[in-house]
Figure (cartoon, rainbow, N blue to C red):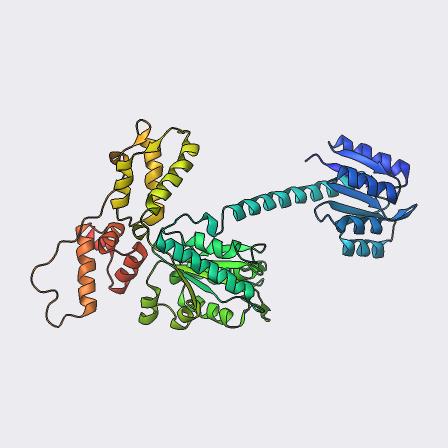
Length: 462
């Protein structure tokens, strides 16, 4: 990385040698012999890095560091001190200096330090770029929809953000986002973070269903070196890494009961203890959880801790399914089509009124995610520039065959009737859990939960 470097050094021979060495490495080097000249050149050049001596004819390098750090926290600064000037180096670091060199110094040492600091600058700039992009792509303004259910959801998000802005002390209460799979619960979580005063803090996301049960506790709470067999070094957990920001626990209904107990304790006093640690740590984290399963049913059946459920649901945001959002279907279809026009180089492709009507009639068991996939496939495979109903890969799940006679045999329990319906759906679709769930009007995760509850295996119906 070629950079602009300012050398503030009154020893002319050393300054020229440093400048030539840095220029041979591809950088642009400028020299100032006094504090006043250094300030002037810094204002003119806005360099990426400053190398400054401590002793200058009209002041000290500490004064230059202080002047730079009043307005600029990005430029890297290196203090050059005489042999034994450790105290000066410590003062410089307190003022905002990034590192120091002690005279006499080897040019190779200077080169390594400059490369390291400039690499850090590049990484920081990349991180800042991606963070700005994430902020632009998040927030309630990025949640597309003008239907009444979406307006109510956006109002709920605004109320929660406003309430937390008025909170005087302590972390905000947790938020539970509920809704079917594919409805956009992650977008809601991001809106709660990036529209709030915590937007400058980290947004950390974990999918509780994606981590093996034996790893999730360590991932969340962290561990000390030697806490278990493979713990070769200390590791900060995701909860602690979200300090000052938001931790998004997606699919929290899949979290093991043992981990739920530890999470509940954290939510009670906002203190955590990593695995193998002796002391607890205080944290400042907003917890946002999401689930697409009937978590209240699981709490009643003992498969999810009831006390954790009641702690989480204090503030809740239900996300409406796509089939209840009316004109939002056409709005989202046009939005996704515009994305795919750019992505696949098809600027002229449009969607017909008949195709939009077909989209409006569909039940959307996969919600917004399914609509996005349908529009992507149509943009890719449609022959010509107009998407027609036949170009849409829409498959409605067939209804279950209605039984004749009694609704249920005399004395049959609700559990037995539920099991019978699940068996029917699985038999009808040869063990395909997704299609069976669509027929029953429930999510795939809820279907899996019900199958486990009744000890049913898909292989038995394949």
